[in-house]
Image 1 (cartoon, rainbow, N blue to C red):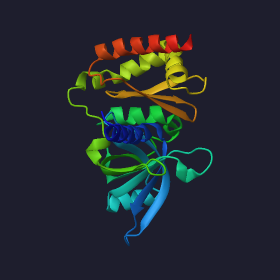
Image 2 (cartoon, one colour; image 1 turned 180 degrees about the vertical axis):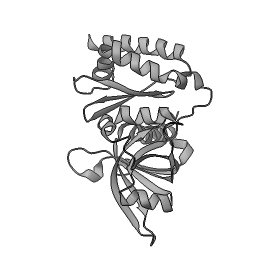
Image 3 (cartoon, rainbow, N blue to C red; image 1 turned 180 degrees about the horizontal axis):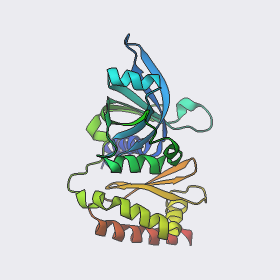
Length: 246
């Protein structure tokens, strides 16, 4: 891989990292007059990286999406210093309501990512929405920008049905019995603060970690397609993390 290819791969990896680690995003919708309207909302992801939102019917942005589903979602990383020096990603797509009883994995992944939302997720005036990006624009800081088709920033899930089917059980098992390993992944492989870390989701390309308001994304060295591959990889990663601690 030459330098240009390496930079291109790094930019795409940054875009995917923002999709998986940002939990509060700016949602831009269109008013009936066609005026852009921006608000703040919690987000989570499906296994392929498409966006899940939980919106109140009382909110202006929800009524606007009911009339016109076109929207954009800005995922911006906060940090010290100049806010414009930190990476951000704009996703452009069309949002649609879905029935969580028909897609329980979406509801589960959203609430695992945003547990405080469980207080009102079942209120009658709240509904879940799904947005598949049609385009993406990355600003990774000065001199680092890229434009992608929507599918370029998504995770391929074809052939990974076995993994996705067992994701809920794997997440529950890791959180119940292997919190020490999750802590090692976070602190030794990702260099995140030494806290109690929890797994919020898995997909073929990586795993999402949360601890309070902090998030982390551990990218797998190669995609996994089944529970057996996942178990083997997690054991290997734990060994690498322990070695890094020595």
